[in-house]
Length: 242
Length: 153
Image (tube, each protein chain N blue to C red):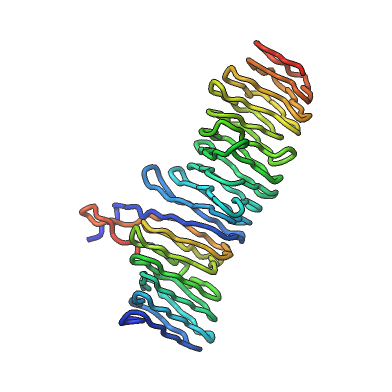
């Protein structure tokens, strides 16, 4: 007998190893405790459809061998968990990755020299948590590559994250030993922005930090680049000018 | 209707339209090719089931799926020249943990239609695909009053 007042869950896993085009929607439907998963494998290209990942849903970028995953059109709206496990990740405009409030983007990729490269000229808008949880090397947003606009939390729990451009009103957090680097483009800090943790923030490759708010930073190294005002640094414990 | 009965085999149709209002069961290792413009219409509530190295190819026609295509263990490969869903909702279900529903040449989710991909198994899109409507992964289903899942079929 059916009881239509009761609902169950029929999970699903979709593995993509090809190009997905169109103007429709891919809905990774889920609810807490009711999982589903979209796996973007080798040579997968999201080229148009909007990808909506519900809370409880999973989006996996895992492309060992071959070319990495690409987002070349449309938007990914993540309220669930996105995990980057291997190969490069490419964001080409108008491709955009919106990590929504409550969403987690977890960089688990580990490699020699550089843990992972994010290429292209698209955009990451982070209102949730963007975390580097594994690997002692760097996640690198290519110089003049994808922008990273942070209104949520960038959590560098291991290694380094090197950003290119973006506007920041959220929190940058580093666990002991982790670092955040800015390289090659302009990052603007506006009201609400803060840097937590006592490790180094470094500016390299002619990057510009534009401070439109006061920013507290424990350890700062200006290696190659500029810092623009009218904001100022507060409570700098160590300031190195190379 | 049982296709490929007796194991390995191939059954071909040409220039027809097949309407399924019940269940078409594709037997293991069968290769069903609907060529020459043959169309396949899987009506709401109807089921096409297969698995264990089964191929369903609507090679020159349209696959109108408003019912359920289901892999009951092992691999079911499905391909079509064009795709539609007159009922607006078509389901593709990998029904067991070892089920694979594979689209070797991709698929197109038509405008104003929803295709649901579900089940404890895996759906694989290996060729270029197009989503004009909605491709939904996983779904809510009714359960029986004893709490058991009612199959999403």
